[in-house]
Image 1 (cartoon, one colour):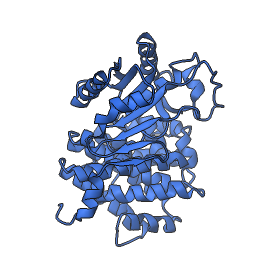
Image 2 (image 1 turned 90 degrees about the horizontal axis):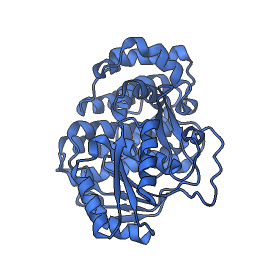
Image 3 (image 1 turned 135 degrees about the vertical axis):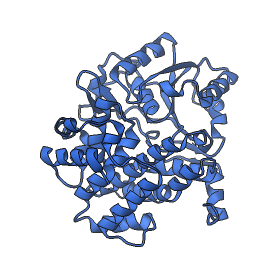
Image 4 (image 1 turned 180 degrees about the horizontal axis):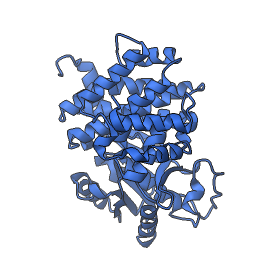
Length: 398
């Protein structure tokens, strides 16, 4: 599959790059080796490494902690983050941060680790309730004696794009719903994008997280309003993902493909600062109730929501089709191309295949309407319409 890859294109994906937009980003194979020196330059003495349950014993955690120790840093490790991070996980992380006398958080792993690390940063040095940081709430006042810890993010999947911004999706265990939390005064101080960290990701997780990134790019671009910065990021992210996702799934050791996906995912993650849509609004609530993998849930839902959204958006469909190098820009053909890509990377064709029951549809629809992503969907939908989308996705999404 790699015979047509130009030397310049491949070399670009393998060359180290330093970018300073929208936050400091160190990209390139092997860049995690710099973590100790970079922490020292940031004035960090005792970082807390935050990751998820499933990543605790993976090689990249041992490599990270070893490099921090070599730099003379008193690092700790908290791995109590669930696949869909819960408020109770964050409380445990805050306790670990305080008990260890830490001054920074290094969030490493997939989207759950990113969200968990960011939420711990939000709460670690104050007594503000976690839910007072909810997206639609007035930002809590942070005193000068309660600065947020320094935050470093290191994604090990090319999917969520959560590494450059400080918003986090957390499950409210009492309500069985996900909410977005954030604060404008919590920046990401450094992102390390190292494609080598994604080489061991198995094909199914490469597919699921990659489809998540594709969903971010598409949904962000379809959000109404004039935001040329986010739109440009969405289209370039979509171009990289369409180009490299099948290669990364079918050739797991292809480092150029891994790099292309990591950058594409990052761009798509920046793009959705503009907003998302009903794929995410529904997926958040399915994940909160049934603990499904977020990217996989998004991938299954995507064609169903596109069939609802794309009519009347022909110009945007044309731009997306061009980014994906498709020869036909009609909405139905665009959806068909997305479905072929999902088939190629073995995404299940229904939510029923990941154990989502049919009788949840009305309840999920009501909850989805309350999600902030529903408000930026390009086409209005009421609870009955969303319920029909959920039912379709459960029975046969494509």
